[in-house]
Each structure stands twice: as structure tokens, then as C-alpha cells.
Length: 205
Image (cartoon, rainbow, N blue to C red):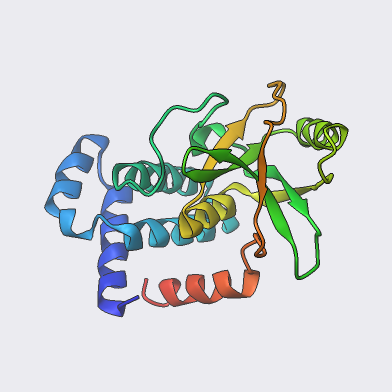
């Protein structure tokens, strides 16, 4: 990513964080040439840093803004979900996903087919995720492990690979579809790759 453009993204983010709500549309309009996929990535990276620093309000705001921007740019499908698409202000900091072959080179995340894209299920409750995994086993599918991940990591991962995501609130009863997709490539964000990206962004702030 071009350093000059990354700095422009950071300047825009700082403007948005410090402005009144009524000024957001004007600022976005004045900087419309910066409203692209790169801005989404930088917003998520900065949100990760804020979250680690305990600045949850700023982190949540940035994640919601990044989600809205990604949807406006067509990075995610905008069709309503039969489960719950949700927004990041509805999500806990830690969510649960279903992984296969954890800790191996064949590690993959459970996804479901949704039109032309794959969709990752994000559970609010580990118990609900475990129940869904059990149902997969009862339908003769491989049984995945339930793993905790940060919500912002899932968002960044979905954005990078072009996947959709669906948030399953605690207590929501869902059943496995008749068809699933288990991706061949590892589906956890590599911590070292993400940290390099994050460090590069923060050096410019």
C-alpha cells in the first residue's frame, strides 16, 4: 500500500473520529476519492489497535464504519440474511467460529454456501457453536472445533477473501444446511502477517 495514500487514510480516520456526527457526510463527500478497499483495511487495522489499548468505543465505531463502507463498495453482499447479518456494535469483542484440523497445515473454517459466495458463521455463544458442530456430526459431516476469535479479525479475514459473514446471536436456533463448504487453504489470519500490516499502518500515524 502506498505510504502517502495510507497517511491520507489515517488523516481521514482522525477527522471522522473527532468530528460531530452531523459533519460525517460532508467529510466523506469531500474525501470521496479515498473511499475504497484500502480505507476499509486501514480502518480495521486502527480499530484493532484501539481495541488492544482498551479504547472500545473508537474501535467499535471504526468497525461499523468499515462495514458500512465495505457494503457500499460491494465488497460484501447486501442481500438480507436468513439468520442475522448484524453489525459490530451488536457483537461481543470475542466471538466463536468452527474450525477443522486446528493447528495443522490443513486448517480450515466452516462456511456455508450462499448464492455465489461462501458465508462464515460467527456465534455469540460458544454453547450454540458447539451445538451446531454436534448437529454437523449427526448429519455425517466432519465435526469442527469451536474456537474463539476477535470480531475484528473475522471482519478483516472476510474482507480479504471476499467472504460474507453471518452473526448468530446467543440463543438463536439454527440447523446446518444440506451443503457446506470447507475451504482447502488455512482460514485463520496469520498473526505475523496481520501484525506486519498493522505495524506498517501505525508507523505512519
